[in-house]
Length: 207
Ligand SMILES: Cc1cc2nc3c(=O)[nH]c(=O)nc-3n(C[C@H](O)[C@H](O)[C@H](O)COP(=O)(O)O)c2cc1C
Image 1 (tube, rainbow, N blue to C red):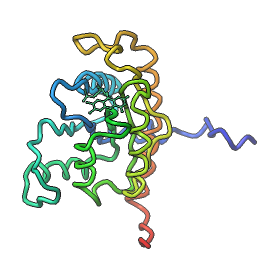
Image 2: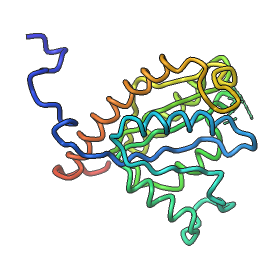
Image 3: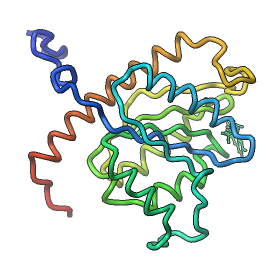
Image 4: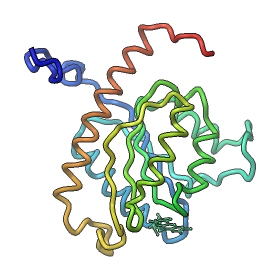
């Protein structure tokens, strides 16, 4: 028996569960005139077309963020932490800034802790020649500390400003649509698997 391939005769845990995952779509940019709106709108339209998710948007530009980390009483951050805790999967839409990811995204990540743990995250990135992949590789390191499982394959847009028209539509959507759908299949699998584990298995003690 070839153990590298799943047994296709067994019921698919996603299909049999018939449950909608809770997906937080997190915007990585709050820049004036950001491209993030176009990329995220495409992501959201594809996610809606799949019909498998309840979605909450986390948009730092809409949050009136406090100037300092750790403002326990700040309503925007309370709401944000509730969204991160509600979600059983994350989809991060991030540009690349100076070979990394934007500082506002780090502020968001660091403003929650337990809410992130033992859940999966996937990435859609964009930028210049690297398509934002350097930002994604840095995010993998950060999420490792938070016990977030990151999807191996991501979706990226090289020279992203050329990929979208002024209305925010992709010039050539077929390949990106396929890549996003494939990535979301993996995210679903991990969301189902980790959700079951969180409900049924005690967590090992932290070192
Ligand atoms: C401060 C800043 C730094 C940037 N650094 C990089 C970079 O290192 N690599 C890259 O590919 N693109 C870089 N870019 C280009 C951005 O990835 C691109 O402009 C993207 O559209 C920015 O996302 P936003 O418009 O949603 O904020 C940078 C843009 C800004 C504003």
